[in-house]
Length: 232
Image (tube, rainbow, N blue to C red; front, side):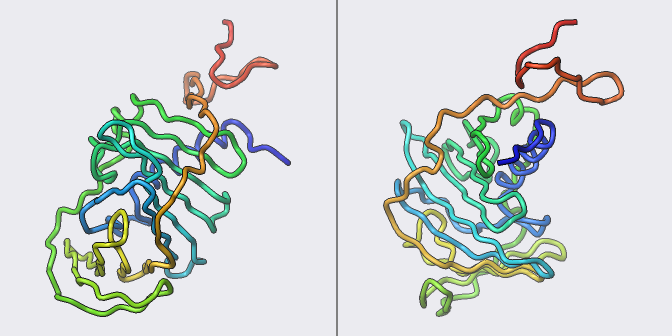
């Protein structure tokens, strides 16, 4: 199998990490509007459709616990890069930067990588906690691929952004049955218990390539691996 060049992998990793942390797409707004209620083993799976693009799949799950913190895993499929997995150790809602203690990612068949804490501390990932107005639209019955659910309908309004979310509290970890915006729709395709992590290997530490003056990555000498320093 042809491997992805190291520098390309670096930028793909950054892009995916940012996407996984933001938990939405194309800047349309936060994806989950209900409380984060983690239960170890709980999972939910969604089909996401962006206007003008092919549908993709996303599965979110609580795959473990360390002390009072939970391992929150996201699996994305249907994009050019293939299956992409992010796994975060969180002390609360993953959409809030302060709650993320550790983060690792795996893209396709590439080795899993753990993102350094200092990268997040420098603000590489932005918090996407809703700051607009939330309107309770009352109870509604919604039919999605996973079944028919009695839900609570909420509408999130901020500036010109309007997002509707249908919530059923028994679905882990967010209770989301359906989310709909102007050019985006996400529907529940399955949910359940017994989720296990898909990252079973020991992740490598993610290392940014050293940059020369002018922003050009410093070339490595033959035989050097990522993270090993070149002699001057």
